[in-house]
Amino acid sequence: MATTPSHIVQRRIEPVLRRALDTFRIVVLGGPRQSGKTTLARQIVNGGTFLSLDDPTELELAAKDPIGFIADRRRPVVIDEIQRGGDDLVRAIKLAVDDDLAPGSFLLTGSADFLTVPVLSESLAGRAVFFNLSPFSAVELHAEADGLLARLCAGGGTRAALATAISDLLDAPPSVLSRSDYAERICRGGYPEALDLSDADRVRWFESYILTSVTRDIVETTGARRSIELPRLLRAVAARTSTELVLADLHRDLGFGRVETTADYLSHLEMVHLVTRLGSWASSTATQTKRRPKVMVTDSGLAAAMLGVDAQRLADLGEPSRGPLYETYAVNELRRQAAALDEPLRLHHFRDSRGREIDLLIERLDGRLIAVEVKAGATVRPSDAKWMAWLRDAAGDRFEVGIVLHAGRRPLRISDRIVALPMSFLWET
Image (cartoon, rainbow, N blue to C red; front, side, top):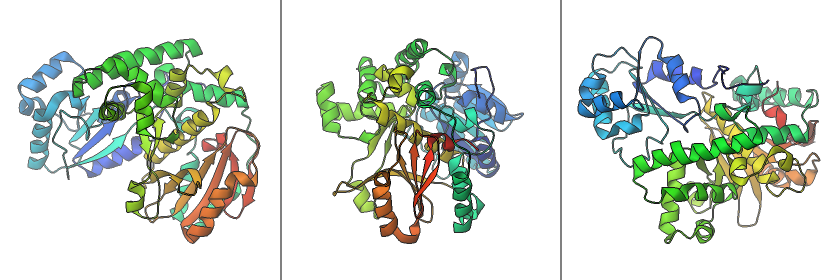
């Protein structure tokens, strides 16, 4: 489905947010600038009040009299870019919901992570629930039905329901997408404003986006003195997207002076939702904390633009960024699908001291596991799933299914509870 920036796309997280507003006093919606938070908040407000702190007049009123700014407003009160209001406004919101326990009082949106913004010390603990809105998912852009993750988790989570879902996928028609089609979609990414731009214009848009909106948000909320270095850091992360984070290597390449400075600036990029870390899975929490996370740019289009990779170049089998960008695209798509589900899921990568590794492990609340391996090639061999087979045997009934996502056209069964699916099956019905 071709999508233009003017087209209103139904966001899959909207029902989840509406249910949260029916239950909790405060709902906080984070996400990068230009991901569609304001548009979605306006749709949800439904007769309430919409206030934007990007408006200088509203920001001044909130700073002068935070309690009066929110008093006697029709609920829900939507406050856009809440991080700009500072602690005084957040404390006023806290007092308001402590006086009135009714659900759905406030929907707060922000392009900086509410819980990591240095100028905000009030966490609203016990009063708020938190969600993230990413740029468009492939399901939102190309599908009429739910995506792969919803299908795997449907039917009450029973083994019979999962077996039916897998059987249906294996019986589905071949994918119609070619290597060039995948390359185009990976480089396009999900930012609404960048969807239909040419490759060259998309790179210009992303560069301007980084230099203006993002740099401003980081400087405003952290006081960072070397904001001019942030685009260079983002390019360095893009060159490492979907690989284990070795901070010392990143620091050595950038030369920021102290390794602590590199760590701080990487945290700043995470705060504005451009970079994320995918923690390492292990059977115990203590073991997880000792293992390195993967670092990942949160949108494949942004990563490709930072690397100067266009669709034609990405379609070349010899392009070294193919594997990491395919993995970045697939993992981000599954992250976006997971955010729209009622069931909270935990996403990890897996690598142990013996070199066994799996690109993505999706862990359900009861500990059951869905394993995903991503291949940029069109040919799948049993060896591509060898570590998933090892985990299946080691985890027993906890292991639900292993999926090798690939750029070929046909689904196939590899072995017990392990299948290979075209990457388009992430969103195709």
